[in-house]
Amino acid sequence: MPAHSILDYEAFSEGFHDPNDARELNVFEKFIAAGILVREGYDTYLNPFFKSDDQASTFEADACGIKAGEILVAFCATGFPEKQVWNAIGIVSKSENASALIVSPQEIDRETIEGQAPGAIEKGKVRVETLGWFDDTLELALQQTLHTIELLVNETRMRMLTPLLHKSALKRDFRARINPKLVYHNLATLSEAGLVDEPAEGTYELSQLGKTMLADFIAFLERARRTLDDHRNEEVKSIGRR
Image (cartoon, rainbow, N blue to C red):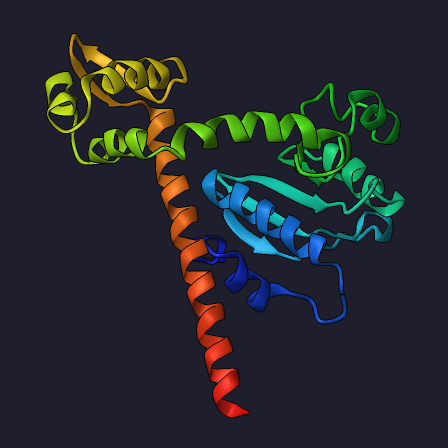
């Protein structure tokens, strides 16, 4: 699948939603799985079917990626993985060039995986991507994410950060546009959060974390703005058709 397909959930959902499956969570998990595979450089495919001469070794997955002869097979579980999923993971774990990725709304511990697919963890054949917005993982995920969002949802800090997407800045550049007291306080806060580096005294630039977080945050705001605009436009059209 092309990389641009994972950039927008609405487009992904429209293109890959199974009309026979009403579970939106399953579509969302496939979106997450596809994003992981594409970002890690895999040629990515959805709903792959793995066929073997041995009928017992035939199974279907939600996604898979191929890179340099290695295969990463993704299984999306809307709850605790079902028996056929564990059977498929067991098959994958026995392969020389394949491993499994489980995308799940709940944590799955090592003991459970070992019990269902013996040897898979020890061989490094299984990894779990836990969606942090469900059940017991929600509070921790919110704490971690909201802390970063709170740093970015601030006019002064955004006025300091966004120019750094273009080039590094000197402390005096910030002081020329922003109250110096606010500059010192916020530079310390952004540095402690790992969003800003100081490669030379008085010179500041975005850290790798800062580049990624700021770009993702702005992209999210832009997508949200477009979604709201589209919704309002549809409402206006709907009123006009009445």
